Length: 115
Image (cartoon, rainbow, N blue to C red; front, side, top):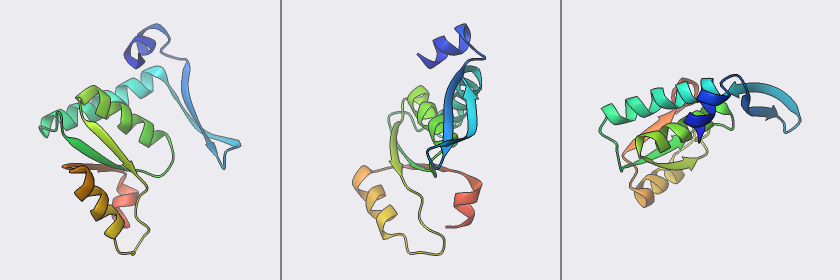
């Protein structure tokens, strides 16, 4: 569906992130979302992650949506989880990885810097 929309309505807004649920913070067109998702899917495929599970550690926002669609494109099962808080132990994340058998984790550089 995303691919079809990116071809037929490339400049139409696909998603808008509302900061605090009210103020528009950022938007993605169908074409931009498709391009980001395909880039993520390509990286996942190069890692050999097809049919695997990927832990998505993203704060709320458009990066999460792109990663989720990237997983769909790559044939990877997305396992969403809130990122750990900076400088806090990670037993919750370890438990999610153990329960889901996630073999790949996707996140932002900002989140990774705080782990």
